[in-house]
Image 1 (cartoon, helix red, strand yellow):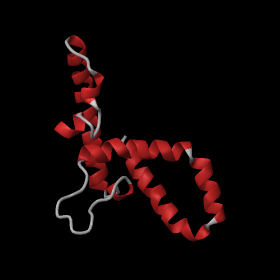
Image 2 (cartoon, rainbow, N blue to C red):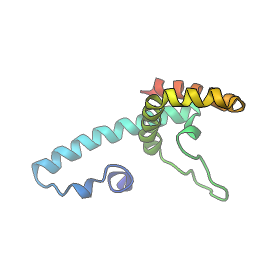
Image 3 (tube, rainbow, N blue to C red):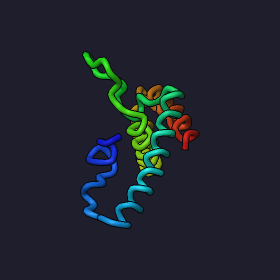
Length: 116
């Protein structure tokens, strides 16, 4: 959790706020952190976290990403796909041998969207 509030997520220390503003900011970040973590747990339970980030690297024993990371970057992944939808569709017309992976990604996006 500590890294998520710092450089791994919300960059709280770079805000340089203090007093009441710091308290308000921490309260907002606590709500956002909880939301991202819960959504990450839902995404992981559906088994589509591999589309958001690598699950495991070769030789690594522990999982690579937290539920917070999966929830936060799952939303970013969906937003990116929505903004580039026409480009992706055009590329799929040019290269049909990737259609199977494209359809798997579409299915994963539906599962991720159901978490939000």
